[in-house]
Length: 147
Image (cartoon, rainbow, N blue to C red; front, side, top):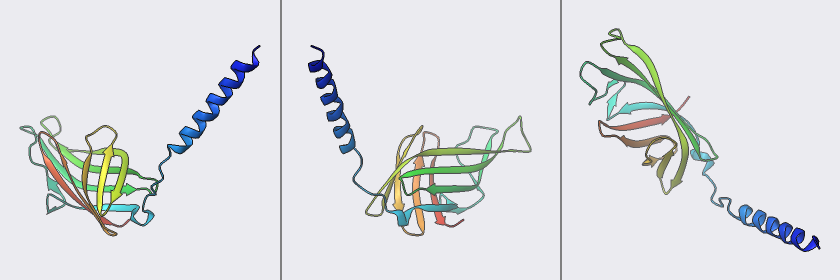
């Protein structure tokens, strides 16, 4: 009496397992492009770089950054700033971290950030370049492979 519903449940579970297994990504990430990169320029200027578009009385200076791209398609970007405000006239060191997933196709790299809009650029064996844009500022970052 209960055998038919139990068999039907097992059949549905088995089908779901097969479908989910088929959903895994068949595309592999190009492992040779994974690695650590060091921020080299911002908007074509050497670091430190004073960001345009900050509020009156505030200065944000981009001092350094690291970008790690893993061979599983994840990334972690950390930008280090010195913020000067009326409350902190000597400046205060801070960092902004962005994490998410990355895809690469034909030299193009797309970052799908967790809490920001996506952005794209180019990647080679030794460099990554992309532009992040907000209402206040557009920032083109160039990175070199290194420690």
